[in-house]
Length: 223
Image 1 (cartoon, rainbow, N blue to C red):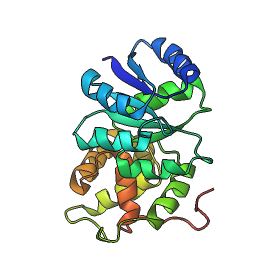
Image 2 (cartoon, one colour):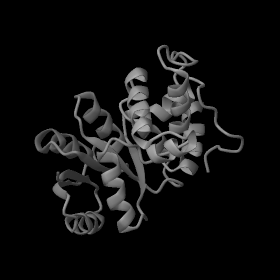
Image 3 (spheres, rainbow, N blue to C red):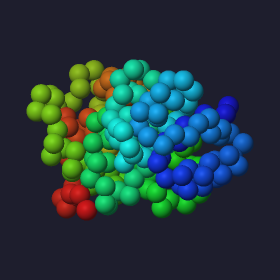
């Protein structure tokens, strides 16, 4: 199956480089390139990509608002946000908007390809070290109306899996941690997403911390 990718970034040189890298992959097709947020929203509706590689700072509307609009219309596209992370405060709002992950602009070509495939498969792309800083920032501004505590209907095992998702573990790592088969871990993850109402793993991470199911570690604030 070929993954359809839309690239949204106002840096023409970066777009060219990313397109070259991804076009060399037999399972990835770059179906469009745009240079601003409004064009990204329009192109997403017109081209139906599987993944949108979205810059944060762009003319018109920024990548966060573009992501919010893409999610609001029910698009199945996964948004992978491009960021410098340590220098870009706007990235902290991206999860609220519905982004499925983050990729540093200095990432290697191999990491870029892996990131696109990971997000397209429904997994979030948030490194454990990044997760702790991200959640510390996000929780500080969490909406007070969100209830706290576990979600009704989750089994004890599913709650364990939810905490491990919040730690940034992959399905294979969850399976190893709990001593279960990878297929079983994958099933538990699907149940967690369904029962919590999370759009993907990234939102499951956010919800785990907002509900108090997972707790930020000491010293894990933003850097």
